[in-house]
Length: 115
Ligand code: FES
Image 1 (cartoon, rainbow, N blue to C red):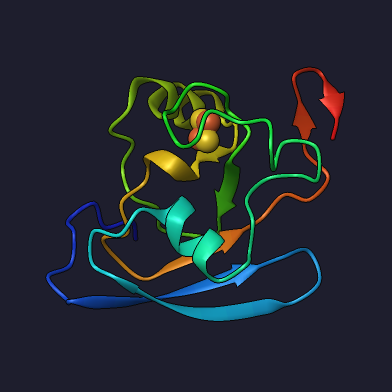
Image 2 (image 1 turned 90 degrees about the horizontal axis):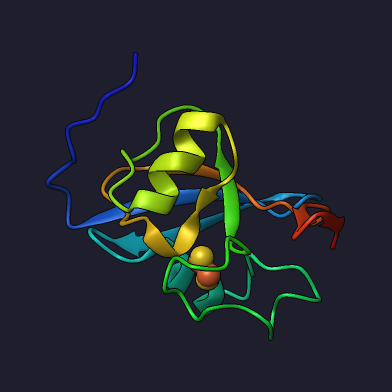
């Protein structure tokens, strides 16, 4: 059952699938998901968009990830549209407020092309 209420735990465990295997990462409550991923060298970007992105401003849609199960509610207009229409969620616009299972998308379509 989905739970939209954020947890008060000071730290959460993220399970992240990189396309080959699962990783377990600690994340402080409220941490930005994109930053946590990059800090642990699990990039939400493709090899092309790693350098060509908006830097976490919610503009380029290249940092998309998917969730298995429960996910934080969207708070940014672009991420809200992604959630509404079933597109990958913008990791740069997500604050970690609960344990999450995150799937990176190494073969995603970026700007109309497989990147
Ligand atoms: S880094 Fe550009 S939308 Fe997330």
